[in-house]
Length: 172
Image: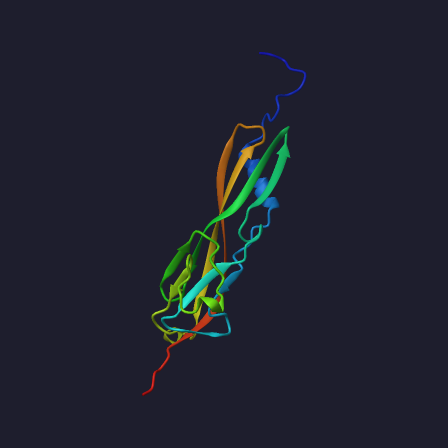
């Protein structure tokens, strides 16, 4: 045995526990849903639906925080690795980007990175609306400052909106 005047740095401190403490300091929110048609408006069967979230440290990342104890400091960085959209018609869409907000200049072009097309109207559901849920998966990488241990955690958050999609009737 060797006696030291000071205990070894970080002795008895679990870096994974410190990583969770760092994550607990972060505000990791659910996606701020952007969708066309907008809730309260009406979409049309067969038209492109654009899906996106606002990008910021709390809604998409990166979000960074640190926690210290026993001479050890762990820094964690959280970013959204994917958003799974449950479209309310039985379909899911997995996007690995924040999506592209719709602009009128896009016309009928589909979203370049995160979109959907409804093939049936929302009147086919009991509520008359499609309940759209966006679930973001936050991937959190952590490491002990000065090298050494590292790891990864995941957390998820979800939010939802209801949209109306109608069928267009063509008359001759």
